[in-house]
Length: 271
Length: 266
Image (cartoon, rainbow over all chains, first blue to last red; front, top):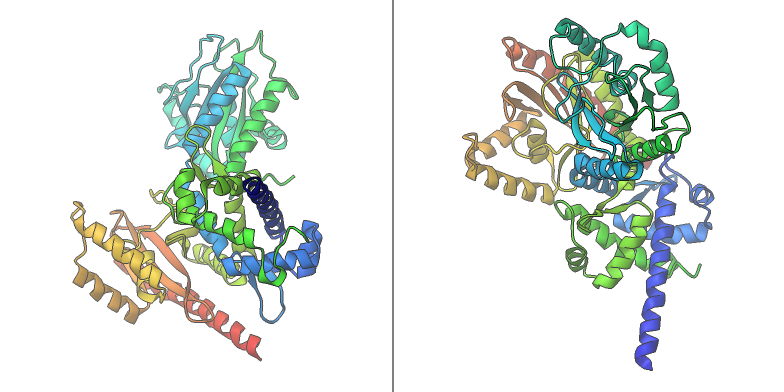
């Protein structure tokens, strides 16, 4: 009987523990968008708790170094321990491992081929491919280098990398003059201006004439916490059977996967 | 406020949860529940409840394949919030941008975080260097100019311990660049005298790095600012022209932070 009561007491404590941990994170999140230290009242307003509740948490946070209080103004700011948390996360987070899990999941959900591309010394370079159920003949394998202007993936890099990098890479691509195994054609940078504007607005790219006829391709960017483009995730389907139109379920799945990967890098879209 | 036991004494469960976060910071890489719980001195079942809450809040993530835990995406966002809202750091970051514009070199801003010098800001400069340095990159504590500045000017005991450990590791390494203990101590003394450190073609043979400290209001190392440029025919001339500019910026910032404290006291 007393054992039962003990167990009950423990589980209540545990539930309370969980609740206050979740409250604590919500209170910490009040600091995310604050450009400068906050008054207790402001933290309470943003997080939706009373000033007395917030104060109790501030006492603990201060002790943990997660929050600092200015002696003079009494304002609270996020503390130095936040940098420890961030540094440890960045050290343990493996972008390729996270991406490989996302590529596999997206391939299972959609049934189409999914490719992961990074910016290499020669341009957009495929580093991972998961083949879909329909055995399409495609030109994408690990190590494939895409053209910047002639592929959906290339357009993502053109839209989100600094323009000087794209200009330089485009010049060396033009010098190859079709003598390499690069996939996709070459169009003048001026010819893709409008397409790039659409990619930026929609957040993903398509290509009207893919390198392999009979395919339909969509590519989406993955950003790091600084908003820099890290990778592109690309889906390749059969144009006769696959719907990749705007608002289609599979484009939504691609976008959700890309957003989730960016979020894991610490990036949150500003919209 | 039934959920917040203690009031002015704080919230006990938050501090217990904090022990798990600390365990994740000090661990190298991802961890199993059992190990985490034992380091944090919490029963595994209780640790699991805490970790589930942190997971829901994205402060912790769990690998779906291995079940191992690491800190989550929110950790990075909190770190950025610290840099944005803590004036000495955001001002130092602005100066790094200024320095890049003025010198055209690559510029790094680093702080001591989670047990090692950690880059928080990278400015690429006008010519790209072939090194893989990004925000979050760890700078070797004894092999880089940035690391040596922490070693020379930091009064923090943990920093000395971390660097001693690394120095021991490198003196056993096979790369032929191992620094003898005595030589290293001599170099550190010199750096303390000169106020800056140079890593000339080491650890990356094609890159030179000059680093100098930014002190906070208490005279402790707040951050280290460094400029990086290629080793070439004129890099010795560059040393002489870049160093005073770098030191000037760092001293300006340090003086400013010192005077901020004084005006606080008035």
